[in-house]
Amino acid sequence: MPVKKITKKFNYSKKDLIELVLKIDDYKNFLPWCINSKILTIDKNKDNLKITADLEIGFKTFREVYTSKVLYDNKTSKIEVTSVSGNIKKLSNIWEFEIIDKKSCNVIFFIDIELKNPIINIIFNKFFNYGFEKILNSFEQRARETIKY
Image 1 (cartoon, rainbow, N blue to C red):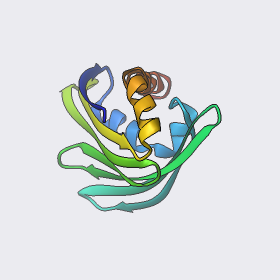
Image 2: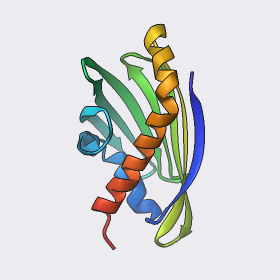
Image 3: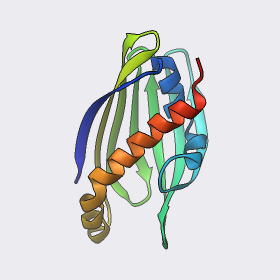
């Protein structure tokens, strides 16, 4: 099961990057292998945001929909994602944001993931680092395209 943690500087505000990550409905427009993305429910109060969302992931003839729970804690600026259903056996995905200045911040991204199907999990493990970099780069590219100062 792949585990990865990386810290990367982004030249965008913490607020703008948090909003980008929480716009799950837009993932289908820029995230590699994401065929569809849909927010199912949102529960919001002043301290946190709880989202349930579906992502349809696909490559060639393989397609899988999985549901995740996304919790955003406004006090800590942390986004935690866990799997609710689908082909994911275990998912712990955490986004943390540290302000550098008004227009830049560090993003600490952690993921620990395991798929239910052992054969697909072996293939997934071999391509994990490539996929991880591609996904992180897609968020950076999306920020360049959508966040304007």
